[in-house]
Image (cartoon, rainbow, N blue to C red; front, side):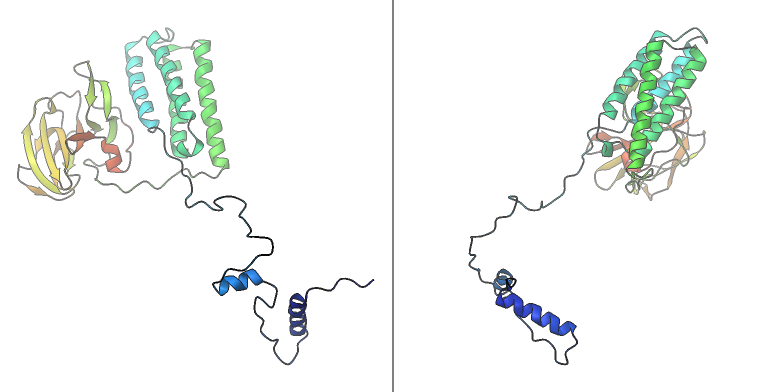
Length: 328
């Protein structure tokens, strides 16, 4: 029995291809989609609806392709601020307690609280825990744990297990991020303000804290940049000086108004190099670092206000300087 013959249109198409491949002198005649058997494509090209023998073909899903891709949204702030506060408070505890007398109760409570903060951070999805942030956290935990053991001696077994477990979890998260190709360094967003003091250390963050002079829990409306006395303090952006002089606990302070309802404040200065009404360009000297007002050491207290509300200056500055320990 002879094999079944293909349909006439498809046979004609195959014949044309065979002749072309055989090197015939004349070019193969052009064929329409309909002649080659692709009736649906020919109908679409002619902008008409083809009559299907078995009804229209439905897509496998209601929406074959999404209009946009889902993205991970951060569920909380970086862990850096928590670790900076912990490190600053840990240094204070080590100065208050005698050496080699065992872990004090407040140190144990602080480590237990930090373990809870680390657990909440590690509960986030992997894209919400950047590689560099994970590395900084692991290094900080290891260093502070080592410092405390050198000061107080061997820790309680239960506390040691809790801390080492969190450190190992950070290590596994770093390994997973590295295996998936996550970058260690991510290009930061462009800064909206320039740093008012160059090469300064960050000694206190924005947020609630215990005031170093008054000893009361109060809101810290800016960041403290530790720097040597006499260092030049410059304008973070262009604007106009609206205040320059003594301002209570802020000591000698300069306040600059910028376009967009933004105000910056520079406090605890040892000298003022501008006057109200001056128009300033970015980088224009405003004063010198000092410790006037309620301050325990030379530093610059820097604030950013927008629309009458205090803002964390770090996102406005774009980058985080090296953390210091002097001046609050």
